[in-house]
Image (tube, rainbow, N blue to C red; front, side, top):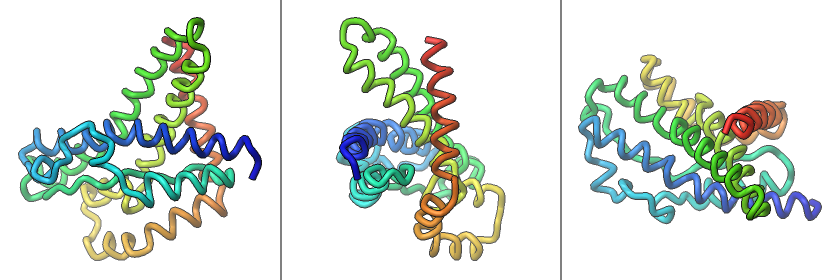
Length: 205
C-alpha cells in the first residue's frame, strides 16, 4: 500500500463517479427508446451521478481493489428493465446492455479530445482527462464480461441460455468476479487492452 496506489484509488473512484452517470443514462435512454419506461419511472433517465451510485460497486470495491493494485472492480447501480416491454424482447435487452459500454467508448474519445486540447494550458487537468480515457475503456471491457451483475451477462440471456443457468450464475457472480480479479491475469489483460486503446485514441485526436 504505497502512496501511488492510494492516489490511484482516489482518482479511480472520482473518475468512476464521473463515468458511471453517462453509462447508466445510456442504458436508461435506450430502454425508454425501445418502449420500456421503467428506468424513467425509477428516476434513472438522468445524468445526476447520485441516481446511479451503488455504494459497494461505485465506491468501496473500486477503492479497495485500486488501493491494493488488484486491477479495478467497480460498477454503477443497475438500470432495471422489463424485456417483455422492450421492442425485440431479449434482443432489445442486448441493445440496452451494449449501450452502457458504448457510452464508455464515446466518453473515452471525448476525454481524449479534452486531454489533447488542454495539454499545454492545463497539463495536470489534461493528465486527469487522459487517465479518464484509460479508465473509460477499462469499464467498457470490464462491463462486457458475461458475469452478473455486469452488462455482458445480459447478452447470455439474449443468446437464450436457460434462465435457470443464468440464475445460478447470478448467485455466484459477485464471488467469481473477485476471484477472477485476484487469482487470474484478467485484471492485467484488461489494463493492457485499455492502455493500448487509450494510446490509439490519444494519438488519433
